[in-house]
Each structure stands twice: as C-alpha cells, then as structure tokens.
Length: 563
Image 1: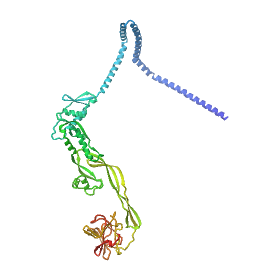
Image 2 (image 1 turned 30 degrees about the vertical axis):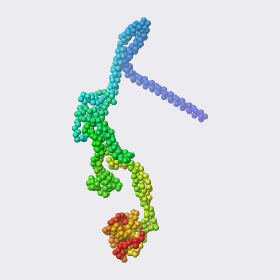
Image 3 (image 1 turned 90 degrees about the vertical axis):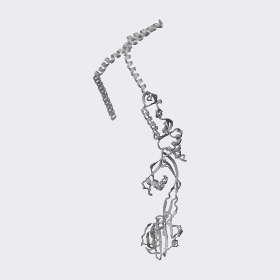
Image 4 (image 1 turned 90 degrees about the horizontal axis):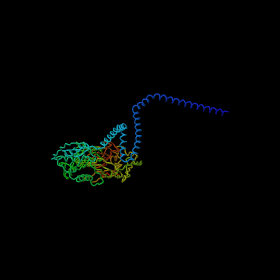
C-alpha cells in the first residue's frame, strides 16, 4: 500500500517537472521571436537605406555590367557561328570576318571596354610604382670619391672617408726629426649605385689617399699599438719576427709559458710616408727600449726593505728616497712600497706555472706528567718539519708579479709533532727564604743542554756554563739555593743578570735573562723562580749563563750542580 503511494507521488513529480520545462521552453521561444521581430523592425530603416544606396550607386553599374556580360556571351556565340561559316569560303573570307566581328564588338560594347580600362589603368600604374620602389630599394647606394678629376674609390658612406683620413694622419705624424710631409686632399663625393663588393675598405681608401698626396710614399708594414702608429718597416716578415722574438725573450727557457702583449698590437701592410719608415734594426731598438715609470709593490711575508731593493736592482737609499725616507724594518704583509722600474715600450704579460716546495711547520704537543714537578720539562719526541709541494699559475706584467692562482698543494713529507712532557706536581719548599741548604740544584729545570762549558772560547775564558735547548726562550730560571739577592738588573755583557749570596763566601750568577722576577735585597728560597731565559746582553741566542763564585773566584759550576 505504501509502495503504491510512493509510485503515484513519483509519477506526479515527473509530470510536474515536464510541464514546468515545457512551459519554460515555449515561453523562451516566444520571447526570442518577439525580440527578433523588434530588432528587425528597428534596423529596417538602416538596411533599407543601404539597399537604396547600393541600387543608386553600384547597383545600376552592376546590373549594367551583368547585361553587358550576357550580351557579350550572346555575341560570342553569334561570332563563333559566323566565323565557322566564313572558314568554309577560304582563309581570306575568315580573316575579313574576324576583323568585322572584332570591330563590331568594340563599337557595340565600347562602354564596357572603357570601364575596364578605367579600372585596369590605375591598378597597373600602382603596381608599376610598387615594383619600381622595390627595385630601387634593393639597390646598394654608395659614394664615388673623386679628387682632381679622377676617381679614387667607391665607399659606402662618408664615415669611411673620415676614418681613412684619420689613419692617414696617424701615418703622417710619426716622430722623425725631418718630418715635413703634409696632406692637402679636398675630395668630391658623387652618389652612385654599386655592388657591396665594390666598396673600398678603410685601409684601401687610406692607401689611395696617400697615393694622391704630394708626399713620398713606399710599401711598408706599420706597427700600431692601441691604434697609434709606432713606426713602419719595409718587410712585414721582419716586423712579425721582431714581435715574436720579443715574446720569446720574455718567455725565456720555459716553453710552456704563455706570453702576450698587454696593449692591442697590430701590423698593417700598406703605403706609408718615408718619414714613418725605419730600418729593422731601429725598430728592434725601439721595441727593446725601456722608460722609467713609478709603480707600487705589495709587501709579502718575509719581505724586508733590503730584499725589495735587491729584487728590483736598486740600492736601499734609492728605494728610501722614492718612499720619502719612510721605510724601516717594520714592514708588514700588504703594505704598499713605491718602486721605480724600467717599463718596456710594449708591455708584455707572462703567465707561467711555478713549482716549488715549502716547509710544513710541526706542532708542539704537551703531555702532562703528575709524577714530575711543575718545573720539569723534557722533550719526548723531536719535531720534524714536513715538505709540501706547491704548484701555482703566476702572472707577471713587465717582469713584476701581478697575480697568482693556486693550482695544487701536495704534501710530500708529513710533519712530525714535537712531544714535550711537563710536570704538574708542585715542588715543596726546600728551605726558608734566605736560608742556604749548603747544596746547589740545577738552575733551569726544564733545560738540560749545555751549549758552552767552563773553558776557553774565542780567545777568552768562559767563566760559567750556558744552558739552553729547544724553545728555550721564556723558560723558568730558579735559585740554585736559598740566599739573598745581591744584585738584580742590567750588567754589561750579561744583560739582565741576577747574583745571589748563599753565605760562607758562595755566590751564584744567572745572566742574559729576558725578564727578572726578583729584586736586589730580596730573600729567596731554593728552587724559587727568579727569572726567565732570554738573550739580552752579549748573546747569540736564548740561554741561561750560570756561574758559581767561591770566595770571589769563579769556579766550574759542574763541580756543584748536576743535570
């Protein structure tokens, strides 16, 4: 029962939808028809106007043209029949019939033919004009250069002539003492039609202008540097050989090096005034000549004023004079130094690959030993510098390095680290300050190498021992025994020096210290730090000069101390 109701409801819904769509469709069609009738009614006057204009203007002519075409077609049929009949009576009758038909057709349809002529004539004129313009536009126009009634050359435009005259002037003004050649060339130009292959180049026009001048000219090869004529020689092969020889001399024995001229160097063959032409030997001297010019040098690592002067073949006073006497020993990498070098006539850049070796510094590794006292130091492994091979691409300008590019870095021999064992345990006090124990200890606990003994040396007696070793500078010097500082300060020959009295006529002396840690009159205990190893006074390197003085007499310290 319920299913029947649902079915009826569904059928009713479908009918309602159908009725709705039908009504909408019918109404839409009615609205569109009504809109079309109104638009047609609205546009009817306009369309009627265009139709009347067409009928008044073109309509009659088109209708007349149609009638004429139909008449001509009918005439062709009649003429064809008449000519066919005339051929039966011979060639002469056919010819007369042809002439009569043609004349009759022209007279009858002359209006049509004149109308076609009125249309075709302007169209043909326009087509002829277009073709004429295209033809002349496709032609190459140039200028004929005339001088004194003769044609010199055909050029593309006046700019070519201007550049050629500039080249002529460049050739004429070569620096010679007796140069008096002048130019007096007044050209005339005439527009002409020519093929592009007929246009003369700047060099050709230059040569022809010189030929027309009153100067004495010869065939030669000119050397131009940045567009300026340096001179000319008769043989172009000689000039090329001189330039190549100059590059080869800069390259030297390194055939793999690349040498090139810095400015733009050109050789041009042509006609040159004799005042510009020199011998091959004179050209060679000019190419190899130099001029003094001030340039700057950037200080590199390890450079000194003396080494810079020597590298540039100067004395130190000359180098100082150029730099207003401001050079000293405190040069740093990156500083700028003015130098004066010989600059060649033509600059040359040389690029070469340089291979060299540099040492690789070793590192110092410290190992702490808590079983040793803090003043203990011993080298377990000596450091060894390694070797590194460097390959650089170096650029030189006129013999002076201007740039460097790293190519490779290869370690040939690795460096060996230096291993030093140092103590960390604090040393207990052996005595109270100022009190002597009666025995002496080694004065530099971290150094145990004796470089000079208690003996004769260099014509005099060395009254002590010199204690040194690796990295000696700054090591701690301690009091060999407790006592009182007799003196602490500068002493001739000994530099920074300390003398301690230990009582009972026993004194010790410590010389060449870099720094003093005690002062005169101070009480010190055995093992107390009193100074730092240095190289002051008459010293050739960092060390501690140690002396033992007994009752005013200097005795061998090794009889009192042990390493």
